[in-house]
Image (cartoon, rainbow, N blue to C red; front, side, top):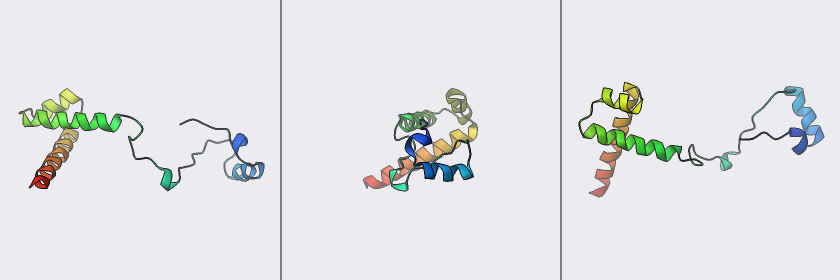
Length: 99
């Protein structure tokens, strides 16, 4: 996200009105609902986390315990438990769709 100077894009009257509420402060103007992007859609972060979570689940299925997984992936015990549960639910849902 980059900053744009309000005086370059807003009419003088509107700028004066905004200054009545926030004079010299930074404000964030949110996107319109129809223009919002889902989290991670413009980067590879979501894909990276999905791949990491699948790896965690596969390691768990291979016999690794939650404490060791937490150390390997630098996550808390609770985070590992949450990821395993989510991946288990995904696997169960995928199996039920096949039959």
